[in-house]
Length: 288
Ligand SMILES: [Zn+2]
Image (tube, rainbow, N blue to C red; front, side, top):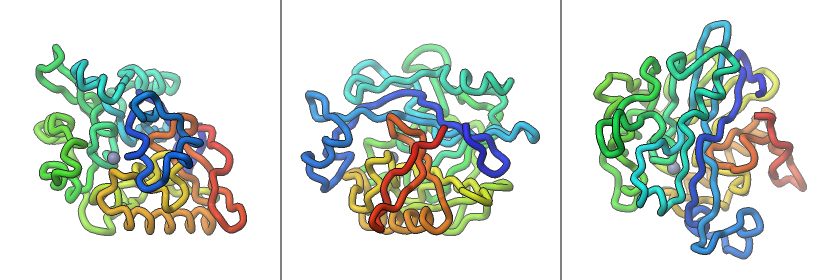
């Protein structure tokens, strides 16, 4: 756990997934990326699915960022990606604070790809049946332009969205749409960083702090290995936009001591960024 502004912040691994290493590193040759992530027999690499949790005990605010792939999987589909999900991971992590799933006040849906948004809902009774909301008291924040895209994706990214991950939230009236290119801050101590490279209108929370703020970088920089600007995922719809966004973020790391929190790094929930010979490189891991 680290303190950031008024929040206690920590990162919870709620499952793992294996995705094609070539797709994860775009134009970077395997001879380079395999030094950072070992490939299995079918060229997949192991990724964590993380939830960033921010708690303000005084105000009894509990904010989740991303929720992993969830448990709405049939065996055959889960096997393709080697998906695992631990539904108890988030409640277990909240327990030491005297809190549970019913105390979650806000879920930030940075983007609606299934490996980030699936855990917001689960099967109600049996697999393949009705879907229910996992955090029924929470406001679920998403950029409305991203939601519109998720409902009508391109043939290139259609496989990344699963409608039942978010339609139950909509029916329950729990979605809070954020609008505009520079959306208003949602709460004290948090503002939005809108990213367009990976998918349109990814909504990334920036936790303010006088000494060292923290940015949840989402799939703009999924792991510490993706820190170099040209190490952009093949999945990204607009890779040059991702590259520019990363350069902007790394500049902010140098200027403002910005720390980064990752959604997929199997080893570190987040890092400080160090400058070596004028080049940003992963610094010490954060105690997330
Ligand atoms: Zn994604």
